[in-house]
Length: 396
Image (cartoon, rainbow, N blue to C red; front, side, top):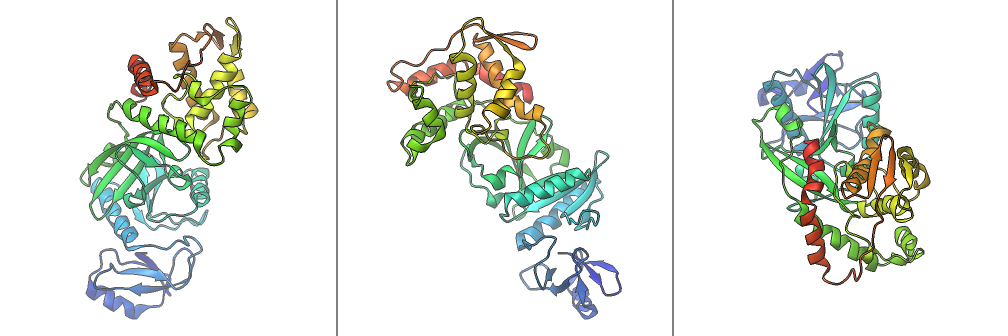
C-alpha cells in the first residue's frame, strides 16, 4: 500500500516521497490501514519500492501485494493522470467495505480499476464485481500479463481468467498490463473451442496510448478460420478417446441415439461472437440446437423462437452451462444461440417469419466422416467463410 493513516487520523501517501522523507516519516509511526484499521509497517529497501505492509492479513484484501502490483498501481495512477482523469489511489469505500486499486470518474460514472497480479478464487472476483455493480460502480479488471497462459492464437480460459473479461456492449476482451515493459495487451475476439481454451487476437499498445483507445475494443479483421479448423478438430478427436469418455454425458447422449461425433455435419461447431458467455464447448451446445430443432423435426415444422430460449435455459440446463457474469442479462446470454440459428438460416435450414422459425431443409449426417476429413472440412469453411466472418464484422 502507498496510503496509511496516522494515530491522529491524518491520511498520508508515500507515492511520490523521497528516501529522506520516508526515513523521517518512519519516526512518526505507528501507521494504520485506512480500510481495516490494523497496524501497518513502513518498508523501504534498496531494490523494492517503499510501501506499507500489514502486520497481519488484511480482511479487506487478504491476498497481499507484490512488487509488480505496487509498480503497476503506481504506473496506472500516473497513466490516468496524464489523460486528465483525477484518480484516487487505494480509496476505501466504507459503504460496502472495498478498497479498489484506483477509483476515478469515467463518462459521468464512478469506475474502479483492480490490477490483479496473483491468482485468487474466481468466487472472490465474482463477489467483488457484483458488489461494485450493486452500488453503481463500473468495475475494470486488469491482469498482469504474466498470469496468462497463451500461445500464438490461443489462451487458457479457466474460471479465474474468464471472470476478468471486460465487457462493453456486445464486445469482450481481456485487458492485460505489463508494468515492467510499460505495455498493454488486449486479447479480443475470444472464441472458446473447449471449456477452458479459446482462440483470441492479441493487440499490443504502448504506455502512451489513451484510455479510450485501449478500452474501445476494436478488433482487427483477421481470418482465424484455419486455426479454428485445427483446434476444433483436435478437441473433437480427443473428446472421444480421453479416459472417462464412456461416462461423458454428451457422448452418452449421442450413442444412445446411434450418433457418432465423427459423422456429425460441419455446421456443428461453428465459431461465433459471444460464445465465451457459455462454458459448455460450442460443439456440444450447437449440437443440441441442431438435434432438437432440425434433426428431429420435419420440413414445414413451425418453431416459436421462445421455444429455443426455454430449451437452452431450462430443458437443457444440465447439459448447457454458462459462465457466471453478474452484469450479463438473459438477453445477452441468449445471443450465442441466436447467432447460431441465424447462421443455420443463412444455409437455408430455417426461414424466419416474425417470431417464428420454419424448418425448410433437413440436415444430413456425414458419410464416412473419418475419411479425408481435414480436406473436406477445409473446403466447407472456405465455401462458408463470409457467412461466418460477417457475424464478427457486424460486432466490430
